[in-house]
Length: 111
Image (tube, rainbow, N blue to C red; front, side, top):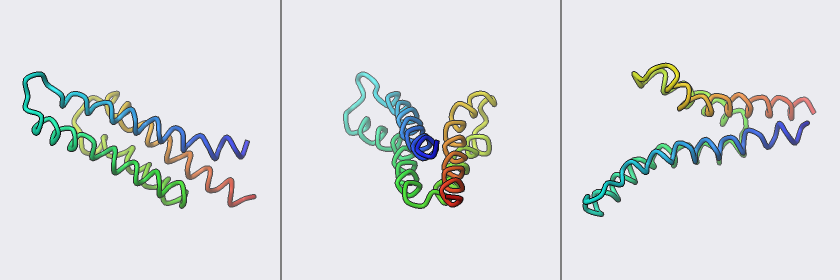
């Protein structure tokens, strides 16, 4: 059970970052000059880069990474005016990942 609690947030974090990164594909438009596409792709990948840094941090310091992932999961609700289900789709995986990192920290601290 300890191995499951250890690996689940890490794998979910990777999957959630890949999911968010898929949205960068909307920057590719036919007929658009490649320098503009490159800049747009970079801008779309910035959240993925930041979340990857949080994941690397969480791998080492679970409690801090858990808090940062929970904050990342709440950001769509605070910053975006999408319907609630859209914000839940965007932030929910990061919220769950953060809670699982916190759970992993507390389980490993108990052992």
